[in-house]
Length: 419
Image (cartoon, rainbow, N blue to C red):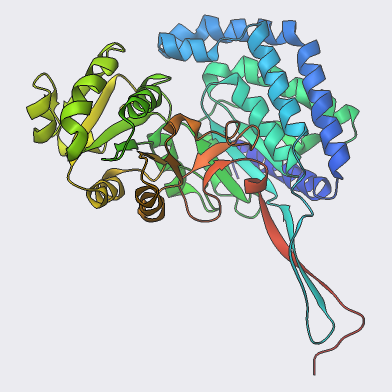
């Protein structure tokens, strides 16, 4: 075994031992630890900002864009936001120990289905320091040990945040290795961890599609992930068009470079002549380029021609594909063919249309008369999220503390033996 492989295995082994101990820690003690972690982050704000300055200074050498550097940059307000996020997780109900089902068998056996932690989480993520704290908090609150592998671009910031959290973990008597940050930049380390299905229960990659596909191809344990976010807004024939315009603009423009931003707009033919010129003008104010099908271009001559690749693309920027559809079912078929099963929205005043859309669209989160941007753990009441899943097993949609649990059966007897 190479030195790198042994080092990674040592990290995972410590995480496994910590997970076993953490699974039995009561809710109030985990909450106290997270509150202490938030206080420690606040107390260490100057040290965290100093570490962040090192990352900002190195950012141009990594080829980061201005937008990426902005996401990387911390200031006192953003550090306070990180601390507040950890506190928010501390205030959530503890999912561990919840009895999901209970029955008494004819034999007198009591059969309980009880929520328990997954165990050890290996989390690979992009260069955003707040994600370090969010993921650690969510994992700990659900009784899991977590191994964090952040991007090299935020290495100093993430290291310093984890140091603050580990101080709080030690001070409150929780197992010290329940939160660990991989301390090597060697890219081969990821491959080593992905082999350890005997120690790691789940891997969660959060970043570009190339990274996620690599993880899926190499991981020997389950992967919780989404590949892309080609999210749709469908404007039905019964839509309030002012509402539809506001929702579309928000879904596309409120923040373009995120997975729950709208990338595709579908418009019922009955309202296309009236709606498309207005939405084109509104999107134009945000410098959004429209590429559309033939029916769209007949109404909007300045729109570009959409290829089939465009219709399936997550642009993550100022471009949107637009198509005119003949019916609700045509819209549903379009979403199911080209969407990424992430987030899709219908705008309509017709409850029957809304019901049919929500039942038939194959997506993790379906919105009715609301922006796709609401697919977010905080907005949907989960607290901080560790990611968004488009899988169907075992979690789907935004993933918070409950999504980092599984269940076991606990069977209580009074001496029964099977005949």
